[in-house]
Length: 406
Ligand SMILES: [Zn+2]
Image: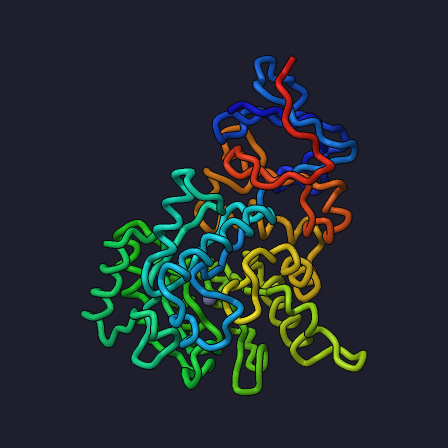
């Protein structure tokens, strides 16, 4: 179906500012075909946007877990509901995400590849949801981070088997747990689970299949190993130790990340907004993570917006609030933080020829707001219209329904 959005000021995903004039955005069969003053002529339907409306590209969350229920606190609880109940909840999460303006997400792990089935159903247009790219079972070690998902590998031969199993299931990424994690008790966030050499093998196996590797890293030893091994993205990058997030910050390791050209996806979620101050004073958590993100930025390391949605209390549809926190912790201007969730994210994830910008030829993933989110980032929480691959995924009552072109 051909739709004309008429008319909105445009932020294209890269420019320093929103256009001053309102333009028409024409969408045909899921693709943007024109952004400009053209009227489209043969448009089949027109959505007349309210005055002052601003359109931006759909948002990308670079780190989610579709198959994790954020209402459940312990990993064991995740497996208690029946598989069909878990599938229904996952489908509901996908619908809530796209209605909130998240039109693409990278899933970085689960145990049963059900999120890949969801990915395919969304791609076929059978279910509403974001475009998903998925990693399947993350590589980990015996009793290591998220071992319960089944990706345990000891030694090179087992590692190759686990990677091949993911490829056979049709993954888009390979995920490696380079350190322990908070979600898995006793795995030790500061502990490196694989050597740089072992991670290099995983990068090589993924690379043979044309895929990139995402490495979960908290402690600095694992971060360094991942950078040296040539992974594409480092997740979390918290420089955590037993003393907490950011406690083990190391400027030399940051230099290695920068030299390797690695992207960092720091998983700043909405709940971080509540962790900035205690009794009126900045918390250690806030100061430490502000320091980490400042160091990464100063070194020129490109950042991806991400939330780790699915872990306890981190809800899948709340990327927008996560971006408000990311702006505060990362000292990012609205346009900078928006790039990390649109054009930059698409580049980091290898999706730049598909999405991330409002440009002819790219997917019609479009958010419309009542005002300019580059001036007020809080607007991100309330899109008045969401198009995902050209289909209306959310429409506020302030936006009239599409009408046939005259
Ligand atoms: Zn995660």
